[in-house]
Length: 166
Image (cartoon, rainbow, N blue to C red):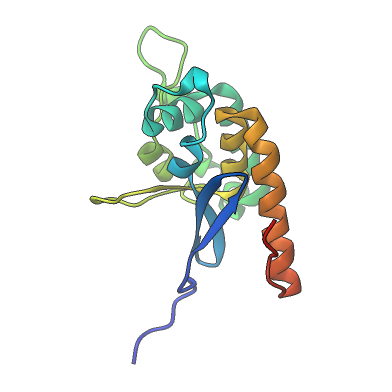
């Protein structure tokens, strides 16, 4: 007899307008594949690998401001124990006023927002709210489509009806 977990046994794929983005559930919370999102970057970022775009996005002060605010509003631990609050200042490079942060480092700072799977087919997963911010960062027009399709998918799940093909 196998032990029951909170994780769903299946993943979903968000599709539409020529893209496919995997959705995986960790403890019944949806996370989108950040590398999939980065594949749809605009031409100005076309020569950059996904991990570089993810690091650039996570290093962006606006993203860090969003993460800090998100943690303040959503994580009980931050309210009970302010010592768990992320401090991006400690990650600044010597002599520079910037923070360079990887997905692995962010997964340790805020595992509720970023999950990293290791191994040959390792993937980076962003909690849905952060993933939608990443979509806007890599290609503003893409954000419109992915946000609409994601909301459509979630509404269909709530109504327990299949999502019709466009």
